[in-house]
Length: 105
Image (cartoon, rainbow, N blue to C red; front, side, top):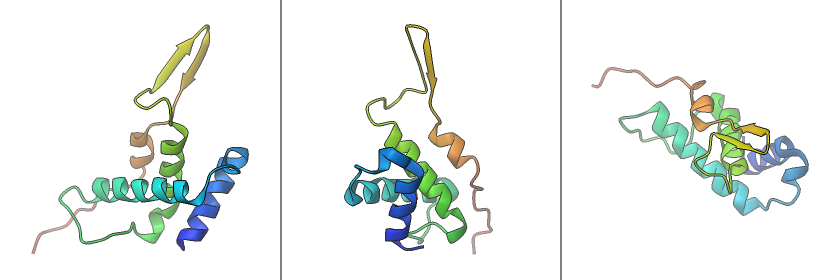
């Protein structure tokens, strides 16, 4: 999937919220999500610079989680005047991505 296709998918998944988001912002969140997934999947480092194709939708999903938490960074739960909000966490998205296990050569 190309970067343009990822940005388009991100905007579609954001729905009406994605209409006003510019491509540079999308790209920044996608880059951040990409790096977080690589760090999760390969905790001891890797030469890869992009996630494997089978994890591209998790990367988009993680970028959306990060984007939606703007202004409420650090909160997983919010309660105000009887309104309760629970946010999806990075850990929940990353839990669906297995860590790479291998034998060092």
